[in-house]
Length: 218
Ligand code: ADP
Ligand code: ADP
Ligand code: ZN
Image (spheres, rainbow, N blue to C red):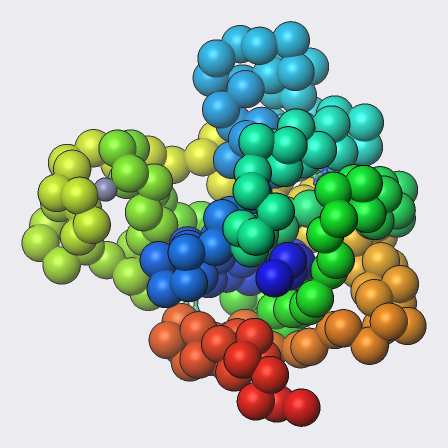
């Protein structure tokens, strides 16, 4: 099973993808995570992407489609993949079709997380992650159970993204509206889009996605 999680910054894509990894043994391919790793390692891709990401603009289609293709090459065909934050433009959507077809994969579901734009700034500015295992948290909506200790790995170090500030979020939201939302009709025409209320509780969103993947909504 191959699925896309689609939604603006802060919609909950990463949160839900990580639960699908834990619950279903799927693999999460987050172009944002892969680009951040490239920036950290100062690879040629990272050096190109750094300023673009800090501004909240989109990295080039060639770069992101290239890293997605490479990531899939190392993977068994039976492994289910969650595309998190990709595709984000029409060109990427078309590349993904080719990338999947070349590897004998099909796209089963596009899950759109429907959220209030007003809530996104609050979600993004309160977001932090465990520096060791990457588990996601929020200052108000998902705090650690024990202060300064990761629920998942016990780590004590946390980090915040440099682009998770209000000004950059506005740019990222505008990019989503202008370039990413318009790819939905491509998938609507194939009848593979399901809309989920992303404003619901995290656990409720997880259940809604599960229901879709199990086909119980048909
Ligand atoms: P995305 O990957 O779409 O940018 P995240 O999954 O990182 O979004 O979520 C953004 C922030 O909002 C995180 O701090 C996360 O803990 C929190 N969050 C995610 N889903 C919900 C939800 N349903 N309700 C409240 N907060 C949420
Ligand atoms: P969010 O979790 O807020 O949706 P991501 O982690 O997915 O953000 O992306 C962070 C940044 O990385 C984006 O603002 C953009 O600069 C870059 N990026 C990630 N994925 C893509 C993509 N598919 N196409 C172009 N740029 C991307
Ligand atoms: Zn951790």
